[in-house]
Each structure stands twice: as C-alpha cells, then as structure tokens.
Length: 286
Image (cartoon, rainbow, N blue to C red; front, side, top):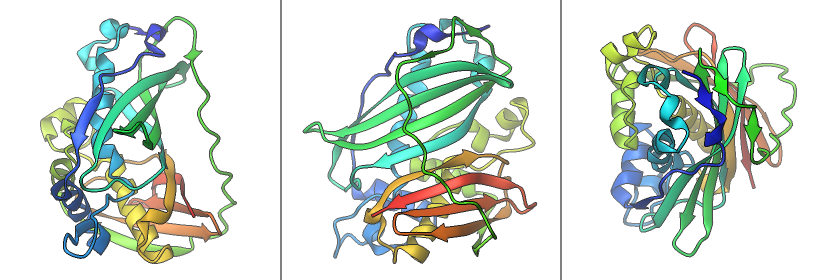
C-alpha cells in the first residue's frame, strides 16, 4: 500500500542507554580495531569508535514504524527498505559512563524512480541536554508509492564539496570472514535478519546475507583514523557516504583514501569485484 506523508514530522520514542565500557569495547573488537582509546580501561577513559552512535540509533529508527501514518505499510513493504546514505555529525565522542537518550524524527518523504525516499534525523543527547551526535539517514523503499505530496519539515545540511577523484590513492584491503555480519550484529546490537538469517535475506530478494552498510563504513573509518589521524578518533567531526553495492561474505573490501586536506578526507570502498560499496565517502576532522 502507499506510504503516507503524514508521518513527516513524527518522532519515535526516546530510548535511554547507559553506555558502559563493555559495549564500546565490543563494538571496536567486532571491527578488529584495537586502538587503545576504545579498549584500554586501565590507562584511558574508554571512548566510542566514531561510528558507535549507530548502535544507539537502531532502536529509534525501528520505532519510526510506529509513528502515526505508518498503518498503511505492509510487512512486505517494510522489508524493502535500503539504507542509501549516511551523514553523521559528531559533537563529542561518546564515553563509557554516559547516559544518553536517542530519538528519530522523519524529516522528509518524496517519490523517486525506484520507490520513495525517506530522510530520518536521529538525535542523541546527554542528560544535560547536550547534543552529542546527530545523523541524517536516507532510506529508499523500493516499489512503494506515497499518499500525499512530497513533504519536508527541514532541510538537511549541505554535504562537503568533494574534490574530483584523480586516482585511487592509498589503498588498504580488509578481508572479511563469513561470520563478520554475525559478529557485528552482536557487538553493535543491531539485529536486522537480512545480515544473519539466510532465509530472510533470500526472501527479501538478496543473493545471500550481506554485511551491514554501517559496518563497511566503520571499517573504512578505522583505517582512515589510524592512517591519517594517528589513531586519534576524537578529531573526527563528521562521517558520511552513499551505500552502493552489497558486500557479500566471505570477501575482501578495499578502502581507497583519495585526498586529505586540513579538514576533509575523502574515500571509496570497493567490493572484491571492483564495485563501489561506498562512494562519495568523507570524513571531516579538526
């Protein structure tokens, strides 16, 4: 059935999380990233990987299905959602001991060729009202129409102007095991069955289970932080990119770091068949 634009402006429930070192360490370990600031509880205040906010955002994104106006969406249509683009703004690193509240607001729905485009803004705030991070997530629902006119309640921030890619630049290959999606699922606490349940993945029209887009992005960010920022993830202020080809498992992905200037790093991630898994990738930093 068509997707109602009356959902625009609606907000999910607020989800409160007590952030402990165990979760932060597990997320980093699931990526194979042993940077001391993520895992050394003796000599550091343990901080979250730059992509750790996705762990907190998942329940709020799922709860958007309960926003008034969503009643017309069938269970089959819910399986057609594709995470198309991600734009994470980091105001400060998440730390062990934080008590954070996360909610998601649908800020735009429009009709596009493959179906509909839905933009969700996800805010994570501390107890004193401090905005810790904010994500703008673009999802495409394939083969779905809309009821009502295209609707937006706010403009999304302009993306960084990316320089033209002149060559592939620095390249780093990352081998991925067959169980990589299962490990990421449990460490991130992001439970989407298309990544771990083959029957569900096949029923959704996929060739097999696939790696999470945020896992692919997080692996790239780990390499960028370690190669370009001397392992100091607190310098990262924004991470984004567009998700393209699926990452099947087992396989090897390649991170291409194209350019590094005073505030911006650009990257692409390729699958082992040479297709871009992430393009228009960027990391902003100070």
